[in-house]
Image (cartoon, rainbow, N blue to C red; front, side, top):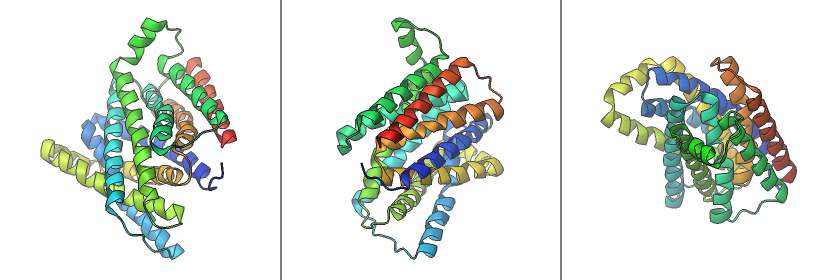
Length: 304
């Protein structure tokens, strides 16, 4: 398949920045509720998204495309799916550690592949499917700690709260990919990066309004806590906007499944952040799972 050269560096950047942002965001759970911890991603992130869009149009001379009703439908729906996925991921961290919570959410690669094949009719090469398979096996090893589990034990493992939240987060992120790619396709401009940045800005503004309104109505005291945490929350917002810019650029320039599979490099950065930033111990099983995820990424890139 012929792809824009933008997709690979954008996806790698997104994976690195997202793991950094998630590690900082997890620390906010000590002082913020699940919804408030999710809100900081959009509330502090949308000004950065607007600056990225404004800077790009200023220096490139690009003209903003018209935003149709279908565009807003896809963008807002994708934004809602991302809010749900983010909240479920934060909840997963409350049951298990940072690495395990992220590992379960990385099933988004295979979920996204199946959804994009069904809804977007995206055809994938055998090597990409092999890469997805390796990545999923690596994720299972990471999530189970390398234990040899029989069918009954494995069923119990994937139905415990952290797994369900992580799997739900992966589904939310997979749906986000589908809707965001659909939103970028409605924009009448050949500039793929402009499509991504316009969709990013519109989506993050909608997310800040939607989740901000929810927190204001249901947890008004949390708004003051969000404001007091501006130093840490500002970092989360900055990284969220940059990471989402990478993801959205990937979705605008390559098949969803390919972007999500290569995006599993986030697990590598997650392990590093979990070990050195959050001081979580790593074992041989994590390294084995990581190796399989890395092989999956290489296979997916080779099959592109």
